[in-house]
Length: 238
Image (cartoon, rainbow, N blue to C red; front, side, top):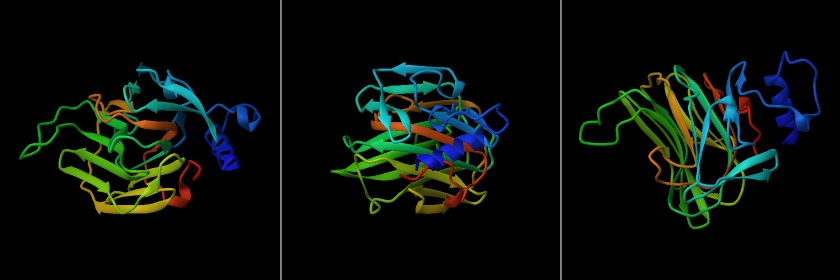
């Protein structure tokens, strides 16, 4: 896995002068094909203004530093929606869920555009989400996309994974089908009448309105404005 990550780092630094030892290569925040956020610090994530809430802390991971959240009041707020304007997309992340509350939101990309509540009620807001549902010592993934004319969750309670381990997760959209993956394995899919989202902001470790706090760690996230097949995913699969 380490070698795969080293290769990815060199790919995204193509054109940089010289090649340092793999363990010391910086990771570019804007890649030739999207954006990368590496959580090896508590501010300036991906070169973007970042606000810290609570006391998240840096820990080690198999790939370098990561940020750990306590599930109570730790979060990062980042002044960017990294997929604004994208008509197709892939969101990948390396994270470690550590159990705790049933519903936890750990990545929230929100568009700043206003939107009226859906007919019959519902929360307004155009967004992408990664959440988990914790059941004892296991969890299952909830990937979600919402905007004008679409509102789709990919959540499958029968596809459980153990807490306390690192996982690669992804959600993709190829122009017609929305999909979610854990360690490169398809969790589920659905048609989606997606339209590109506008500029906005993001939260890591909690929902944007500061509920559903995450207990666990996040190492890295990558945002690609096209749909990648599992064989093309940019982050290592633990």
